[in-house]
Length: 90
Image 1 (cartoon, rainbow, N blue to C red):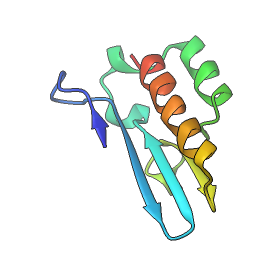
Image 2 (image 1 turned 60 degrees about the vertical axis):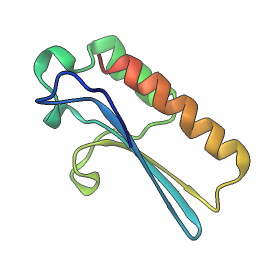
Image 3 (image 1 turned 60 degrees about the horizontal axis):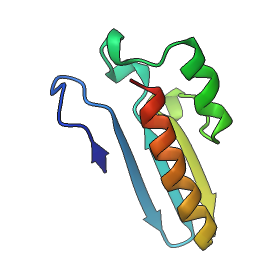
């Protein structure tokens, strides 16, 4: 998990999980962010362009992505997506 230290009440984060044949990642959804920390309209357009799926209840209202049988380039891609997504959510 990568999380910002401030604001402590609702920090933005990216989290990752690696299972046998799955790499999953999530980025903080609006439900967990103070209004001033949420992506603006441009951010809402930019985040999916980097590869994130829209927040939904099945993913705890977070942005999400999954790679089945991930290869090295998938790890690089999800790292770049996390950086881009965190920039857009603040």
